[in-house]
Length: 285
Image 1 (spheres, rainbow, N blue to C red):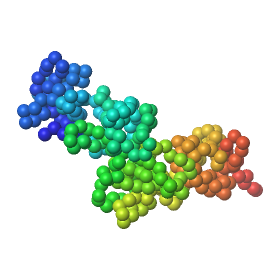
Image 2: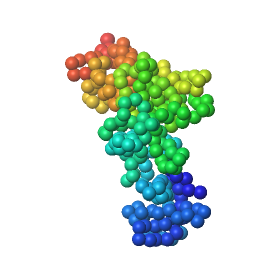
Image 3: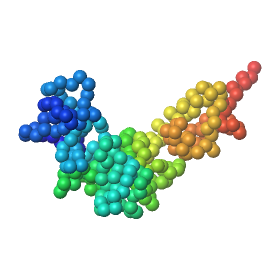
Image 4: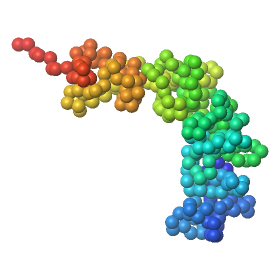
């Protein structure tokens, strides 16, 4: 049976003027428009296609892959606003995805804005839509994580405590402001680490692994960058959190801890141009 909003492997039945017809099961046929027909096809071939409803509510197939499928969380850009029904978001297909007014949270979204949504199916029309009211779509099961385990995080919304996180497209997490060196862009995807799984099934997260596991690798990265740069690098304790995150994948606080350890060991020095390798110690006779 064909699954709307998902990828399906369907058999080519026949060719027609608008494209190829695929076997949708139970005697149904699903059109693959001509612009998506692969080269060298033949009747009986099995194609991997995404199936959704067209503007006339007919199942249609495409070989393109959307930015999110049914059951996925994603950050999508608002393309247009229909004053009667809601906003339309770009999800990588020719037909945009509807975000109804009733499924928006906070101020009405605007064209050009990127929002984190959950791809759902409207029960009445069977059309794919998306919603910003996604808390009910988290898994009800206890997250099976251990402390310091790496997870994929989607930065969803900001709260007074920190950032609300979608963990591995399944669970709800929280990244506290106190564990951050600076702001994080909403909608970004980053690797994080589990601090603890709470009894209410929510996950407390960190951007860096705890303890020595996070400082020793950064220490080695700093020394490697210094050697490659002829004994100097532009990064120091005054560098921006964003630059440090991009270069070393850690918070500024973790970076400064590693720098301090290297300085105490007299392995580096700080100058106007950044961080330098300290000169070799002289050995007395």
